[in-house]
Length: 228
Ligand SMILES: Nc1nc2c(ncn2[C@@H]2O[C@H](COP(=O)(O)OP(=O)(O)O)[C@@H](O)[C@H]2O)c(=O)[nH]1
Ligand SMILES: [Mg+2]
Image (tube, helix red, strand yellow):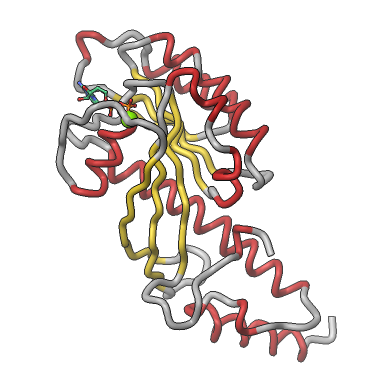
């Protein structure tokens, strides 16, 4: 089963486990962004050494299974930047479902690295359609801005990813950008799950997301009743 349809065991206290990673050059604000999202406040960190992760629980209202609400456990991987992406452990990428690719709007070279990061993700990610959000961070430092919104948006369009501007200091769009990645990932996961069970002639209820079990069971029964 792909990472996208992997879900919790029956007794755990969440419905889905989502693994995201924040990538980008050194000092773009990755650690500050994650800290702000998890703790809802700003803290000035020292640069990350190696890779670490944060955990956060959120609830999510499904767009696909209308009325369904899921308890999500987010595992948010932080990473060191610079050219060290080459040495990032690629096995980590196996389960990553969503990527936050960050650059610093006050530092052009971090913007110019975005293409390299995209290539890196495409090369190492096991999911053929990874969910990626491009973030231009540090918009509070507007007087030092080097990369304007239009230019960043053009690149995002070309790369077929969503572009959002944030400030990890003020918290502007921090929650919103993470919520968008969650939504994109959950939509993709639920659609893949539906497709999987619709096309399956046999069904193993133990493999289903608990919250979707009743719904999927109904779907499967309807499918069996259908003559088409
Ligand atoms: N002005 C401003 N500074 C930021 C922002 N985000 C991070 N920083 C600062 O940029 C520096 C590097 O941040 P850090 O999170 O360690 O970057 P990382 O190497 O990508 O993890 C720190 O001094 C942060 O306080 C932001 O949104 N605005
Ligand atoms: Mg860091």
